[in-house]
Image (cartoon, rainbow, N blue to C red; front, side):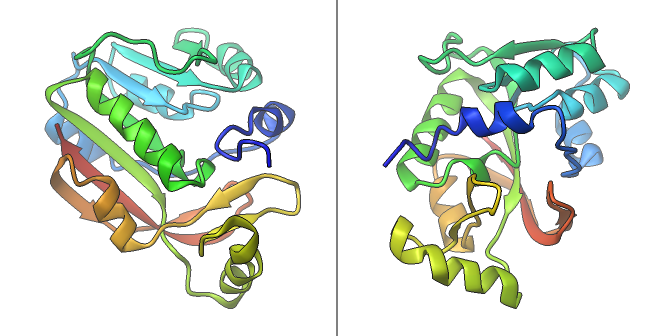
Length: 213
């Protein structure tokens, strides 16, 4: 089986057509992050969240994404941003480089436990002491459509909550227990469960986690 944690071909294919709407809690971030904070938006897509932060006065933002097409779109839409393609070798920033790291609907694209844990370990390394990590993503849904596809795909992927979209990509929704396990190495500052829209315009339950190193 191909590496389901790395679906660059899919994201390059849809980079110019998908519209991301996943919200961030700006007031919460502003409470913890001065405007001078150095912020990494990991999995930034075409830079939508980076631009939102820039509009609020943040001036030291870096967006990084594995999809070169997403970055190309972002550079066209928002030429004033600093958007970079993630190297195939992975995160190469020095230790203690950032005051904050954002993961906005990124974990859903990394279906395996090992893939998610490896990413969080890397991100903790590049966070400065007391640095902030902000994760917003999807919890397990309780509607019939989602539960059917969780069950349908559980045998193939060996995990309840991982599923394949008709358009081909493989995604994951998360149990609350896994969220606590994944973030165990951080100090929890805030955890909320808002309703959001997916990239295909379906209403979904999400979690928004704020922690510190």
